[in-house]
Image 1 (tube, rainbow, N blue to C red):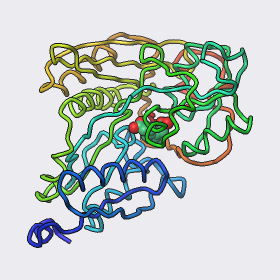
Image 2: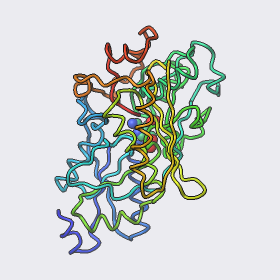
Image 3: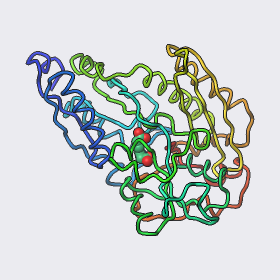
Image 4: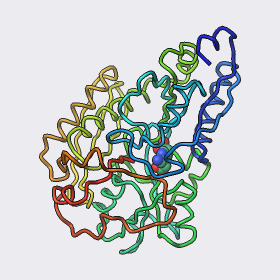
Amino acid sequence: MSGALDSAVGGAVLRLGTRRSALARTQSEHVAQALRERTGRAVELVEVTTEGDVSRAPLSSLGGTGVFATALRDALLAGRVDLAVHSLKDLPTAPADGLVVAAVPPREDPRDVLVASGGRSLDGLPAGARVGTGSPRRAAQLRALRPDLEVVDVRGNVDTRLRFVADGQLDAVVLARAGLLRLGRADEATDVLDTDRLLPAPGQGALAVECRSDDADVRAVCALLDDASSRAATIAERALLAALEAGCAAPVGALAVTDADGELRLTGLVAALDGSATVVRTGSGPREQAADLGRRVAEQLLASGSPALAPLAPSSSSTSSADPVHPETPRTSSAAPQPASNAHDTAATAPPERVHL
Ligand SMILES: NCc1[nH]cc(CCC(=O)O)c1CC(=O)O
């Protein structure tokens, strides 16, 4: 079970824990194949059922969809698997005791896309069109861009969401381009939403390969997959998210890119859930100080005094819960029927779900 034993026998089979969704399996297989190619080691996928896949569960930590990560992390800590692949945007920002992100492989396209019936673009959707997303970040930015659309709260895996459009229940859905690319379905996108229109979630498009901190063998193997620029970008984005989680309850977007001189440039956004206010700040700095950059841009956002920044109600943060997978049918967003009001009122009556997808 231990890393030491694996090293002793040399080339022991690496057990890679994966969730069972098509996207999770594809991402895991992608990492498994990269490891096989670079190391010649055998890698087998071990399916781990997570709370997020089977039942309603409380968030395991402030601000994260820990439901997706917890069972994989438990399997790692129990020695049932040697490594696990997460969508970085689903991984809680709080580090897990005894575990380490051993690799951030080269990031896929971080942008969101629209998949609309009739091949429509976002601008081409008629007023009143029903657009599905389960993400407060996407909902808020969609409402800011197109207040005339009806944003519908949908849950379910990528295939389920695409089916809502195919069978006419919805006019469109918004999804991560990275997920569609990995599933070989990127050609179903009808509008690629540039990041100045819809800023992605922190970590979107990136994977995290996690293993036990004391497993030197697996850490060394995984290090071969690490991409310094993807890692630095996601460190900055997640530092921004972590700093904002401590201070506000609004949906958050963040994207860092490496510019021509090798510096990181980070854009962060918070939005009122109803789209009535958004605030965007940017900053840049050396890659080696990515976390500082994230905290600095977060401070600028917090200092903006924008009504988009709903203060975090003392009692709300630990009790809010989210189930990003079920039910499987679209339902009108709980935020939609509320009269447009400032973000402070919204936070007081209905704390937004602490899910930053
Ligand atoms: N929680 C859902 C989730 N987690 C990661 C991805 C897409 C892949 C990525 O962002 O890396 C998705 C689907 C989506 O947002 O459309």
